[in-house]
Image (cartoon, rainbow, N blue to C red):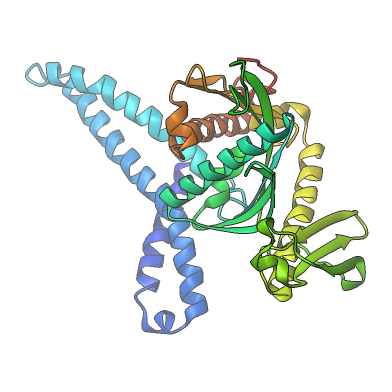
Length: 369
């Protein structure tokens, strides 16, 4: 059952916000205008869904009354099943929209990709994944800014860190964290044998200053010559910045910019996001094992996906989804995968809210499909 009273109250608040946003005193106050506009934007999907629900409810009631009329009965009998399906779908949508939002969903992300098992082939695969995310970001209208790059001898990436900025980035990218596996014939393979390599992906919500406070005394900052490839440009200045967070031992190095100040700012941004991620992992660990399995944790040790080139196949092991469109996916067409993962998570969260038993849980990622 839907909380009709609460939904009607929120609908009235939405109308009130429309009125407030037209008032001169609000329009002249940037902070208040931004605050009220944000509230309205967050309410809009829920209010629209509830409006559709009430429309369907009214049509359904009219059709049920029409069953008593011989002239209208046949048409009503045809419409009722379709309206009942629409009502059930809207109920699920509204229930999900009523769930507390993840405060990280609207944040930018720090993307970290590292070559794993497989040597140079793993580094090349890491570069393929980076290009995949760069193209996906472009289709979404996001901005991708490299922050730290460590190249391999064959043009792959031992490690690459980038900031992705835009609308609702974390809510879309949150499912990409984990171990990605590739099965293909490397360019250097003379016998035509298929090799298996891996790369790890970390998706960290960008930390705000209010999220993480770092004492200067906890930082050890060192400056060194940048080690960019090719011996040009970035190599000519002592601009690389390395920051060690003494309490945790975390070390971040940035050398992408010629400016020490810019590299320091980028390194601090990455450090804060990693510290925030540690806190998130502590919170996840406090959850029951059942709940962690239901919603998926995005742990970097979790094997999440296999890219099989000979079979043109991508398999996401968490939800046991296989798509035979590897070329499209590796070229940045992630929409179908991400939509399926988001839908699965929504079902899991609703299952939890309704006292479910894990029927919608994420697989542990050890499937070899």
